[in-house]
Image (tube, rainbow, N blue to C red; front, top):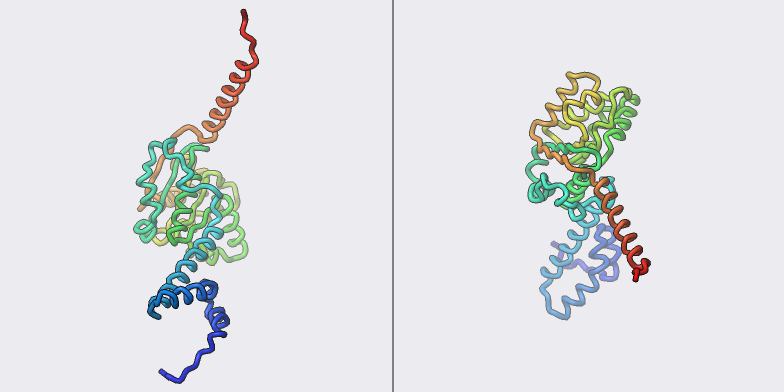
Length: 272
């Protein structure tokens, strides 16, 4: 190394900008002043700045991936009422939300339950936690994805469109059974499922059991093949509970009645 190299410290902001180190560029003066005061070794200062840059880079990456995931806002594990879905283990869901082995194997999660039972909330919450843990996720209504893939097929670009989904460790297909086989070329959904089989994971929500999926795919053989691929290496969670929305409406109604009763009690004059 050339010992005669001279460094113009005034150029440091420009150098950090060229190296794309925005966090160090914003904080180096604060930490170099602290290092001078406290007598830090040069290696400690360098390591501290590098760790800050990496931590902030990870935070920015998570924010980008959250935007990209298109998850419904507010649907996190923290806002999910596990008491309302006692058949679903909080510990089990927390383990799934870390990703790890099941995503590495391309395994799937299938959520079944009636409309309003919290399937979409649980699916989105798992997706949100996975993004926080460094994975890439896409949340989409099944009907929307089918429409996108149909458009790609018409443009002779279906293979490319399916390959682009490979960047996501998990694709969440919400409300599968709202897809109807009378839509043109719904076989594109099967082609996507087949392409991801044992490579990339899917999370599917459905308000209908497997036996009703013949309404989605063009024929019984394709339905059986799709179910076979999804069920192999899968976790199945059944949420056969009363609708969240129905319970919430009943709770609001009870509160209004209680409030009305209190007002009536206050305005009624006691009889002598």
